[in-house]
Image (cartoon, rainbow, N blue to C red; front, side, top):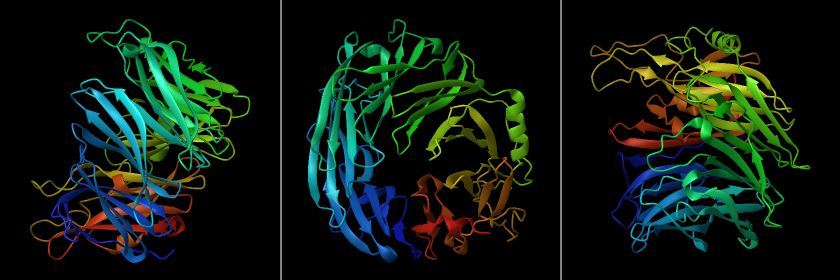
Length: 497
């Protein structure tokens, strides 16, 4: 694929100078659409926008389509919940929050990618909402084969009433395949919906938790009283299969979930003794698409196993700088990768390191590998240079893991023009995780490395598919303008030696 860049003028806000309206838009995200096409999404307010600006860019950054949508709804504050590609359309999931009515109306807006004309607006109904929205009231999932989309919402009734869930499943034309209301045996005040997944056959999973004791606004929540639940519904009947997570004396600190192409669902998270911070191990559950066979495991992680992984990952002289906490706690869960052979890999991170936890097809723990987060030791000069753990981005190539870190201090100079650092692999550098956990650090081979003033914005980088990554960053021009730069690049080119 030919590499290309987009350069747009920014200054914290992106000034929409090319358009008729004299409105300033804030950058929200850039969404790869396939091939060389990218959707650029900007809003006049990132929290509750009245306007959203959409632009489709093609080869060489050429504008292929552009539109501006008015999201203003009388009496409501609108939030853009998600922007995604599905059914060869650009999809906007919107939530219209009505403070006076304490309700939220959800709708899906679909636009054609070639012209950005609105082709469908689908309402998912209105649900009651507390004064401060703190729960997950809605969610969506696309089947692994992209043939179907599910949407759920949770109308919050009186606190003591039973939970009502509305689940709707649609085909690619947004025609209904099935829709059902499910009444659960849990009170609204005690329940929380975390998310959902859907299989190719249209059956749906809902992930939730229920507080098993009396719950009021003054309740001090105790982990031991939280029941983690997985609900499975086919839509053919009103029956729900309820799967309780078998945690024994332990409580779950967090949970990530994923599904492979065949519809096997897996979920995983760290467990610990109730009301303690240190994790005891990793919990895994698998529900197969064939006969819904369920496998649950509590995989203990002893101190020696974790320490050995830390030691192997810290052998690199550059990566080992900066103190690492040697206690297993405080990790946020990242992506849960589903592999064709039935195995899984969970990525979890905290500020000083990232874990890759490999799980066998039988849900047993295979191994743990660690990548320390590099620490930037630049000399401090007020207002100029960052000091602390570096930001990063990870992706996979086959069974290999790669991490890109960005050091904002690399190449920086003091008042006399002397470089503050000469011992780092580069402003952006690549770390490859080897089979047993050993790491190899080397310069970053991307075209970004050839632009000395460009800095990756790792929070906006993403892996598109097994062969490509989308990299986005900023660059300062000779005039002092901040430019937005992106590239779609072959992984093979990025990781080559």
